[in-house]
Image (cartoon, rainbow, N blue to C red):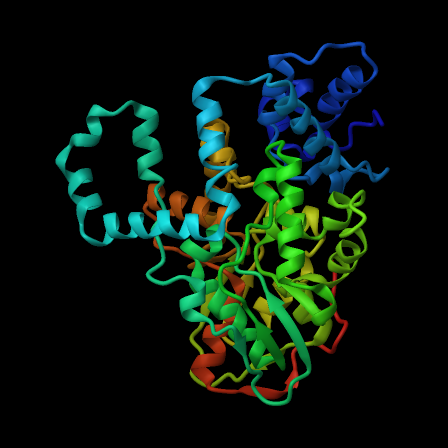
Amino acid sequence: MHCGLCLPTCPTYDATKVERHSPRGRIALMRAIADDRLEPTRAFAEEMYFCLGCLACMTACPAGVNYAELFEQARAEVEERRLLDGPVRRLVRAVTIRWLFMAPGRLQWLARLLRLYQSTGLQAWIRQSGLLGLLPARWRELEAMTPRVAPAFSDELIPPVMAPRGRRRYRVALLTGCAQDVLFSEVNRDTAEVLAWNGCEVHTPPHQHCCGSLHAHNGELELAAELARRNLDQFPPERYDAIISNAGGCGSHLKHYGRLLAGDRRYAERARLWDRKLKDVHEWLAMIGWRRPRADGQPSVVVTYHESCHLSHGQKVVEAPRAILRSIPGVTLVELPEANWCCGSAGIYNLIQPEMADRLLERKMAHIRSTGATVVANANPGCLLQLQNGVRRSGLRLRVVHPMTLLAEAYRRAGACEEGWAAEPGVHARG
């Protein structure tokens, strides 16, 4: 395809107007290498990692080109050929991708150390002491972005099995994620409670594995496949009516285990069943119909909604989060200009491409300010962190929160739900 309809939707092309920074340009590079007309070089590798992977081009593409798969395969080629290899990069990837995120307890162990560093006041003292001024500028920037670790992790907040409120309608499994677990565990708790309020028996096993999206998006497809197998063993899809994800980026990857394990005789069939059972929480609530909270004691609040790229472009779940937000009494939902334009988080993009990520964040914050909202809702942990950094830098008094938290808070304030449903089962299930 050469039509170029994807170009206006690509944040990196929009910022640079350079053809190779567009989906069309990147696909042309991939095609030239596949046809042996071009040798893979460091420049090609850097271009693949300059891409956000936001998938806006897939929404725009009239021919349905699967850029996500091309993008992952290209990065896998980069890593296989070691086009960006170096001692520092090799060490960082070994410690993070190949060690830290391959076992559920390791990230929690590191998070506990960081929590101790923050809760004892040591972090605040170091920041006030001026010692950080001795570090290189980039290190100081990274330290300022250090997220606040949650006071408790998901398995400390959610029982392994949460009974439904009232009659059981469904049995579901809840995935707690990696970053979501250690930074936004309250979002997982809120999600479990919302599901229980809507007739679901919620199974949330402790010590869950990473979904593998970090690995797949960074060229480690074999490690991603291994994590997929572990999740299939921990969550046999035949036992549940649905497997629920509340993180847009994770969910987009989780819905493609069938493709990832297509050549695995032992797991291929179960992976295809998994793909059919995997649902984003907003998508699931729209499918089954969710209860509207009672209006008693609900405050008035102006909310705007920033779409996670992988929730909207990857999973095509667009209207359901908005419908859920509008169903909360007291909430006035103001549409965000360029709501589905990337905020610059994009997994670890804000760490490896800080200049472009900051440009995108500034653009996003300007649009948020224009809405006059006091709350911005978003359904992905990376975006939540990025927006929180934007709020802190700009000095705005703005709450950044997951839609499930707003819905759970409304349920708790009212103590009950209306007898009817905010949507009949099947309404706004997708799109």
